[in-house]
Length: 422
Image (cartoon, rainbow, N blue to C red):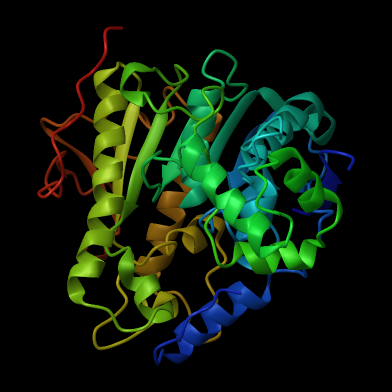
């Protein structure tokens, strides 16, 4: 069955640095394909891609919108591992991936700008575009889900709160998303002020409007990008899209899948200089505790919630050996999209079975976010901190739920959040 790709649909008019450690051939191939697959940077980036089977008649298909990660500073929907061709074909769904403005372009921090969360607004615009146009591709605008990884997963979280009363979508999947902590308004403005000084747009008079105008009109995109590499620009609390009081807020009343990988630092260890082991332990806790807190909060608020932990560790996914890189940050993406390179080693039967299983679970959720997982395989139990409700995907190289108590891996995490009144 042919899958058509509609690349670069506009939604609006308008190098990872660090010393790499020795890696295996599989790891080299993975990282090279990932980073060389990103196209040249351009300001004309607000596009999306659609993968859909040819016209087969029948009912409209469920839609899966992918939001890429990259720490809100890098990344692209054009990374080869994010190709939706196989997911659309094997899952009989429509897959959409989107771009959004990043770094200083997406999250500037300028006091005079109408918003400093432009990247999140870009995402919302793309979601609305899908709602309004996906029927033309055979998609069902009433069966759309968001799924994303890392900053993409955090973006999914931001979307669920920022548009809680008008979510457009019917479900959310957050893969390895960190907490929703964001820059305060003051922190964002200080970052922007530092950028204006580096760009020679600040004369020290405190005239922020003049500095903002200079940054917008007189500084090239290339220079802005170079400046932004010295600072970190990300989501900022604005009280409209990003908040500082999530413990008193409710997200959209939609089902959620939350999870992370068994050894998140496996990727960073390859890309970063040698660091003390405690740094990697803290990074693992950051991802694990964020998943634990989110899952507990959603479940205790009465939202249909499922939680997973990914353990996949195979030769053609490994970045290192002795020790292996384990289930590193982002390693679940390739099985979900069925884009695991076969150049170093072909899939083992167990790997293929597990990849099909997680892909099928995501598709089942997309087709019916309320009941899809309840009836998938032997059924996924809704998450609870009590009882065997944590799904361990690829645990011991076995296909299925491999259930364990919900809080098994949460040692070292802060207490679960207090649930506000419903």
